[in-house]
Length: 61
Image (cartoon, rainbow, N blue to C red; front, side):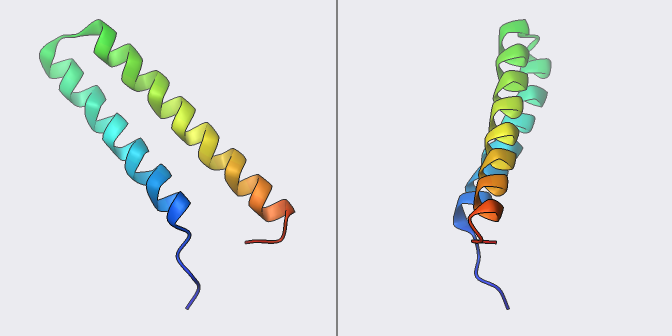
C-alpha cells in the first residue's frame, strides 16, 4: 500500500469545507458568502492540481 500524501488530504478537506460553505451561504442568503466560498474552492483546487503537477515532475508521485 502506498503512503498517504497528507497535503492532498488537507486540500481535499479544505475543498469539501468550502463546498459546504456554499450551501450554508445559500441557506443564509449571503451573496458575499457564496462568492467567497466559490473563490475558495477554485483557489484550493488550483493549488491542489499545481502541487500534484509539481510533485509528479519531481518524481515524488
